[in-house]
Image (cartoon, rainbow, N blue to C red; front, side):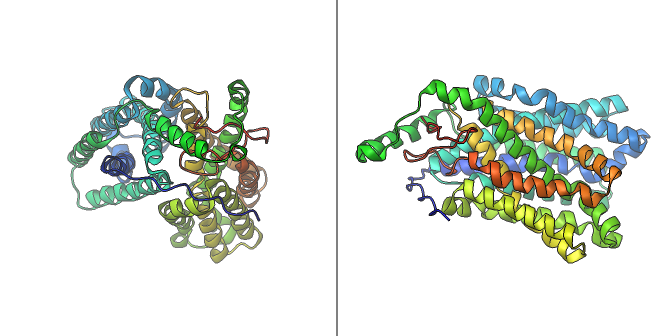
Length: 437
């Protein structure tokens, strides 16, 4: 096994950077809370509008549709307004859209609001990650996994708040309006502490520091820069490879949320009470992996962590499919959750550092492909399960893990800005110029 990559040189973290980190954390948290807070009360929305199960499901499906339609607009908004403004103003608008859901008087109004919510969520997702990478460059080490971990915490928090409000019989409009207003204020306050200036400001600073380090090093130690045209020629292939990794992550996460309970009931034979534990095992492991992942990534490099994670996914899923039982299934989904925990942040970071692309474009493309993966995954697994069995269909998780272990070599090694000795792998397998160049 090759030696672990050297840790990035320590950066002096300013108070501005520390405040920005807290602000981005709040943005991720609020983004998760807003809709998760509504989910436990969707049965009341269904009852108030007199909707069938199919009608409610169709209305909810408007969210991913809105995300796919609007997600590719994020770079234009970020380049014009900046990621800070797009993220915070998007959250305020999302809070308004969610607050209006209990007031929807028809299926069309509900579907329209959820379409808008999905569109806003896609744009916010790109903006908050883009800004998180700005802050990460100031830190000079990995911090973005913790942001995604806080998103998971926010989803749980929102679900708990919504469940408590439902249990206390708080009127639906009052509950959603109050929580939306509170978290909209949090988003506005967070905006005050986000970074200002051009989106590439921190990239330029990191690049200047890297150039200075290279100037101090012996000439033989610095790699010759690759022609910019050559890097641009590989950008599309590299984005495609990153899209494949993102889709693999979607297949793994969706296996727990959409199929874990059904697998335990039909293939393992557990009762209803235990069936939900597959999803819990995946989510808890993934949240723990994200909250602790930054230290691991700084120690071993995000490329190695992702590839080893792919093997963990394959081993965990393969074990539970080979020996079906409650214990092996929970262990399998837990291993898969740990394995996939840092994958999407690593994919997004590599896409965001691709040279020759306008701010936010690479990040937007892989985010959009990730959403396509979540849209396609349930259908693919369902079709294969109907044709054979769910046990066979979930081999897709094993395949996804193996693909991550192989294709993960295209990821950047370090999660912070690339340093002079960093040579990211292109989609063709060869070295490319440092994305910070």
